[in-house]
Length: 191
Image (cartoon, rainbow, N blue to C red; front, side, top):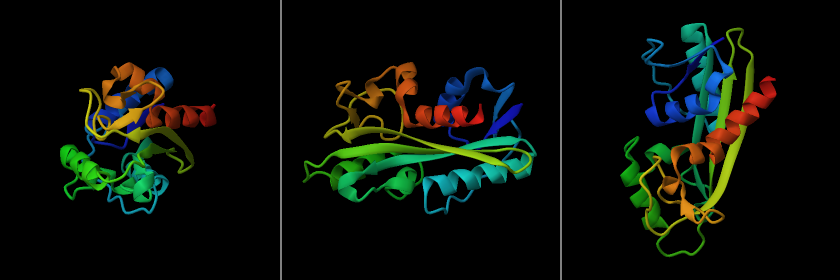
């Protein structure tokens, strides 16, 4: 079965392809499938945004489509940035500005608990859907550390490992990430 990943985010595509491995005959990005489309993410939850993206791509392509929506949820900020993680500082995809804003907002608190959340939706050509969610828990560091990863990885500290997500080798991060956990939960449902 051919699968189109409903994303133009190169980092996400790399992670998803690495995790899914041989689960599908062919896995294509939007670009590889010749689809130029950007879904308006106006859902109130990660799950709503993931489903909307997957459905739109399935309808455009006629193929099975997989989409995720994910982000960082910080307890001290009432779950923010949440669904606004990629545009927390205003400009979509400005990771450095998003991290600076987060550090500024947490500067006067010791409450650093946070989690990454990922919702996955796979919509088949017949319109049926399978969905799953995954999480990874940690805390927000006081300063960035690490060169790997993207987004908030350099600030997301894993106490049990003694490092940030960005300090982990990519294969190790992929084995514990929220996206990994959501994908494996999805694959279990598909069996």
